[in-house]
Every structure is written in C-alpha cells, then in structure tokens.
Image (cartoon, rainbow, N blue to C red; front, top):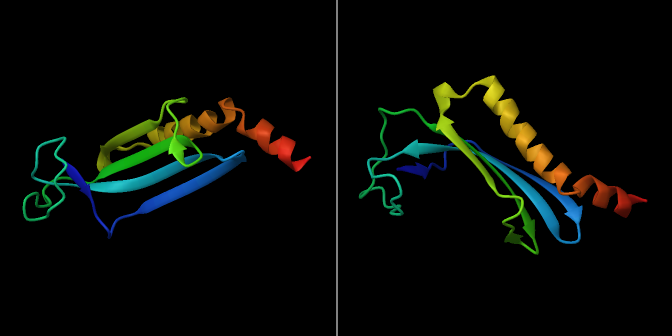
Length: 115
C-alpha cells in the first residue's frame, strides 16, 4: 500500500467553467508502506513507511458539479513509480486532463459567460 506524506509535493489546479462545474487536477507523491495494497489503515505504527521503495508519482483529474464528483467524464487516475515516469507520460497526463474539460464544453460555457 501507499500513504500520503505531508512533506511531499501536492499540487492542485482548479478550472471553473460556470454553473457550479469545476475541473480539478491533483499531482502528488505517495510513499509506500508495508501494508498490503488496498489497506485503508493510516496508522504509521500498523503500516510503517518503506524507505527501500521509490515514491509513487500520481496525477488525478475529475469533474465536479455542486461540489460532487461526477462519473462522466470518468475520473482519471495515473500512478507510477517516480523513477519510471517519463516526460511523455507527464505530457499524456496533462493532455488527458485538458481534453477532459475541453470535451465537456467548459471553454464554450466560459466564453458564453464572458460575452
């Protein structure tokens, strides 16, 4: 399993498109623990961090409406060991999340609210 570490990078970008709709992009690192994958325990005594494994580099983007996560478009989650992350993967993540907001009509709504 992996757990968040307060000392690690955590970025969040917010794109508002009006009518209570938001698109969020989070980039963060997870530090591996000794617990099995899927464990929800967050106690560092029960699930101590591992220093013999690389950090996991994760990106997540999703759409919310009225502060609730929407199922369409499907939220995007991508995690990989940090040393294995390539520049192409970073670009692919960014492109995927940008297209998610564009394909949902966010620029049209935003342009309509500006005019």
